[in-house]
Amino acid sequence: MSIDHVLKLYSEAIRSPYLHYGFWDDPSKIHTDDISLNDVIEAQERYIEHLSSFIPKGISNILDVGAGIGGNSQFLITRGFDVDALSPDEYQENFFKKKYNGKVKFFKTKFEDFVSDKKYDLILQSESVCYIKIDKGWEVASQTLRNGGYLLASDYFHFKKDRFSKWHTRASHDEKKYLKSASDHGFKLIKEFDQTVNTMPTLDFAKAFYERFIDTTIEFSLNYLRTNHSWYFEFFRKLFGAKINTKMEQLSLLDSNEFIKYKRYMIYLFKKES
Ligand SMILES: C[S@@+](CC[C@H](N)C(=O)[O-])C[C@H]1O[C@@H](n2cnc3c(N)ncnc32)[C@H](O)[C@@H]1O
Image 1 (tube, rainbow, N blue to C red):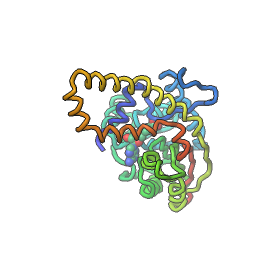
Image 2: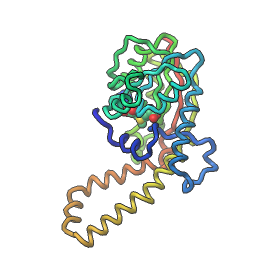
Image 3: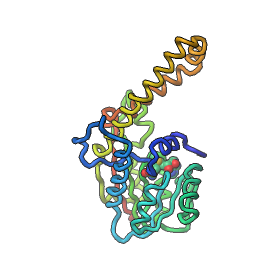
Image 4: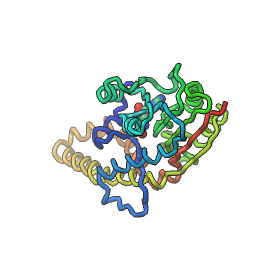
């Protein structure tokens, strides 16, 4: 992978150092229409604050796997941890280079291909679990951690699959397979927390934002084209029609009611036991 343009778009549009869902303390009190971009960024800060409360005592060095554009790494550094970062993405590598000028070690590689002499106390995988192949990921985690080290994972996993769940199951791991593989590779689950309800307001915000600004702009542009340049309209419809339909189907990923039918957004803390 050279550059993940979807993640690049998020980071440039939201202008936050985080690429995760954020954490909402009391989702029942939140009205989607009142959420602002600043609220989302504040929720993202609460997410890493909450997630880091799962880091056991005695941890000194951390490998931030799938480090994105460095928000979590920065948070952990300010809390006194010694942090190295890893991601296969060139844009993110350059971002780290500019931000830290080499002070934070950055490994540009997929985690599955990572080879390290250094043994870490803890591996953080914040919303990067779903990108990493399950078995290989646990194999590399075992090689990369010291005995008694920890893997702290925060991501969504699917627990159900049916003929409508295509996009949801494609973009996430099967929770049971993931947990079994952890145990098969000598990792014991010592803590878990279901943060699904605390993450869904961000999805509701993204869906509302899409419907209000993007959908309406597309509709306006298509109507304009159909009325004023019907030949171009037909040309684009033939060329991109099928692709646009697929993209529209993918929008179900922004629907929190669909999300909770199939997925859970979990925090898991594992300890390497053998
Ligand atoms: C949704 S972002 C999360 C970024 C960051 N951890 C955060 O919480 O803001 C997913 C991250 O995983 C990275 N990633 C994708 N495939 C990966 C792989 N095979 N191994 C390690 N990281 C990967 C992406 O480049 C990106 O940095």
